[in-house]
Image 1 (cartoon, rainbow, N blue to C red):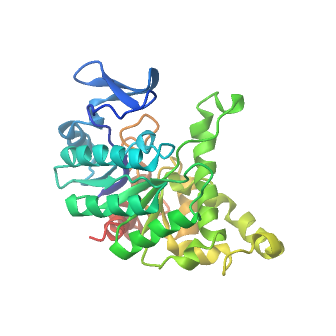
Image 2: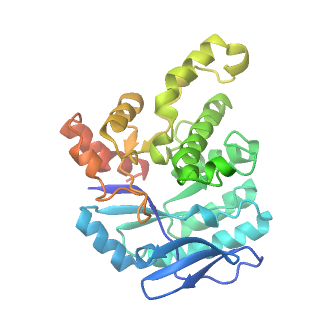
Length: 323
């Protein structure tokens, strides 16, 4: 069973969301559309975002049995009033169920993470309706994953057995990050690394049960490469960094990462750092910076045993999904 834990959807249209700069879709043909933020063009997409038949055909071509299908982060609406974000979440979560009618497409919902009570309520509604888990952004404004409200939501996810996929979003801007897609090439890995640190140094893993199933996108960002620096700082400057009960390496078994790193040397570092049980196939399908053919890095990695390869291609994801 080959399971891709990192894919996204965009519906082929939705009602007016109620504010001038709200996301909307300009459908340009049966196969192509443009996501707009107000009148500003954000991203061109194709029908593999909304058409399950096209998606399933691409999966068959790449030998993928199951996709976890998550929202596209631009729709999170964390900057909006919580009640409005809850309404947006309901719209996209209900449309996701239509896209994911096939048992091969496993929907993850979005929630109004800025309000923990509303977030928990929307998660519960979605789990009852057929969603299998939840995708969250890695921060809400200046509140990182150690924020009390977000911790409350993560505790609820653990209590109801909902797996959580953490995706970076809303990266820092500025002239130096406007070239070369630097927000994606530098900002996303840095955002993800920072939020893993928040979970550890913010003491979240000391307060959330180890039953919480948590996965970070994009290989966990730059975390694996800099774990040694992080660990050194915890021991040498414990007065500043030592805010968790245990050193950082003690928490490696508490979360997983996907495999979207595109290089065998990087994948080897991930497996060496996270263990062969802590890495899952992810592609970022159907976006242009995703892996294609899906799973090619894991399938071709010479350092993996066949047992480890099977875990990365699907076994670990099955456990993440509670299958």
